[in-house]
Image (cartoon, rainbow, N blue to C red; front, top):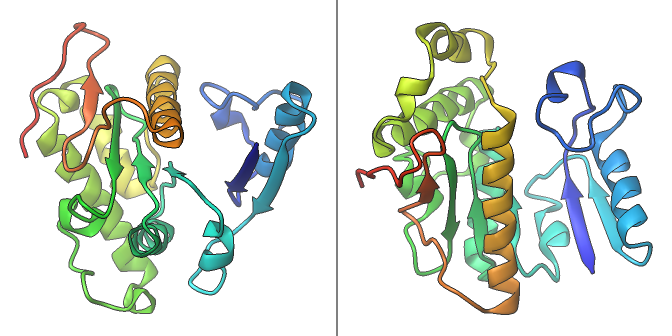
Length: 220
């Protein structure tokens, strides 16, 4: 097995509630390093490549030989780079969000693009033209689009949680819901690699409301 890990962060106490390799003794350590150590405890033969950043210069190297991309990045510019290159190279991209509902969907060459789904004004533009300020606004826009799409998901967030996202750039997460989404993303990636089963193709998500044990209505 060959995995490529992309994350420039270090574990911190706020990760303890949901990130599987975050412990008191891994606090402050690079996430990719810790993940590599634990994965090799499971499979010592696994091949790991670690990247701290993704840009237009190293994207092709990062994606070389890749069968599927599992996207859980909370920054717009890396998402734009990966989604565009994935489409150009014909690599399926699995997306999921840390929401109150478990969710996953897959972008392919036959689905709408990530930029189309989120109604980004970046279509046809050079990524270098997207400023940090615009990228932050687009991240908020993407969350608002999802809030529109999943009926009822906003009911699980108090006004204080919704307010601090644009003001403090901090989200509210609940461990079981994050793990449910991670499981759905891993399962979707496995189906792509094994070429088995039905994929949750964009623009729709495969989504589950664990609080009411129901499949929420989606507005596309």
